[in-house]
Image 1: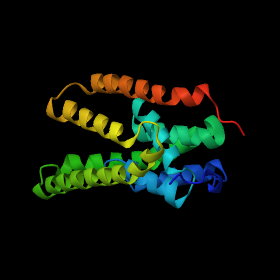
Image 2: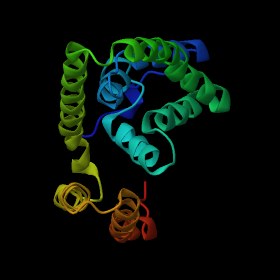
Image 3: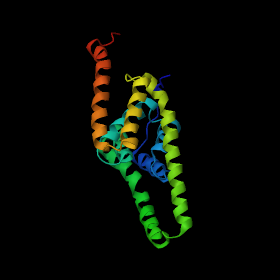
Image 4: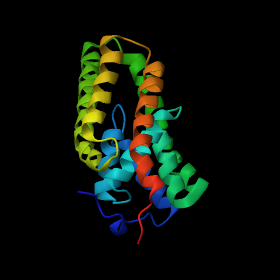
Length: 198
């Protein structure tokens, strides 16, 4: 089911955008992508799931951290370059201070077995959050021109290439990205050639 984009809300100011991304950043441990979809699509209703998946796809192929790219694009969507910088500042300012404080603490207590165990546990929690978000976003693929079976094949290919064969990630992204873009272009070509008439 495609979500109705006419019922979407919009941030009222760049300050609201800054605060929203600050709160979003403070909810993430090991990355906020798992939380971003829930906050931006379900709680604030600034984006549909389909829009979120499209922006996330672009964010992942650009250089730099995915979530920073995501913040920049969403901020720009609502308030241009000023919104982009407000969203990015919200994503980075307070977490930077927290990371610097935690780095100082880690340098002091890193050899403590309880600290090491806690960090390993947080890694498992982060992986679970990302996996759960991926499952939640699968529904958005139903309306994608790529179709679920093709997306699943690309997912399995990427996983096998990187995790099992240990091929370099950059070449996998380039190779599978070209295949995915070519397939999507072939599927969309008839729609572009014959636009819908009112």
